[in-house]
Length: 116
Image 1 (cartoon, rainbow, N blue to C red):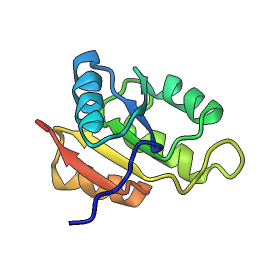
Image 2 (spheres, one colour):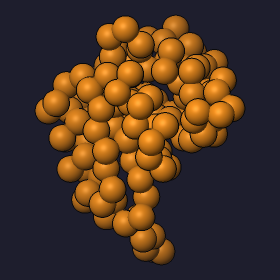
Image 3 (cartoon, rainbow, N blue to C red):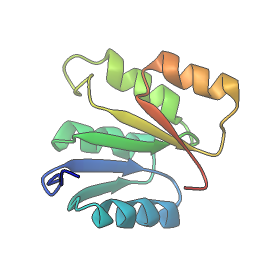
Image 4 (cartoon, rainbow, N blue to C red):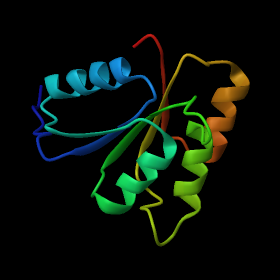
């Protein structure tokens, strides 16, 4: 099996639950990803996307004012502030068909069901 060097991949984890942010961050570190940023809500996440070179976003569906699907729409529709093509994974316990379909339609790259 080919081994990939993921040490230079920049990941942003957006989740209101500190424990979940750390759990996902630790899992990514196990794959060799060393550059992990954290945000507690959509607004903080968007601010980090403007300031930092992010290669992958992992966000929770329930973020408060801006949920993960709304956040994705903002990113995908932006042509100047954010990279509209950044891969976005939705991390959620809400795996009902309607939520997954809405995520797909908003431009989510994939859905990860909780518990991870």
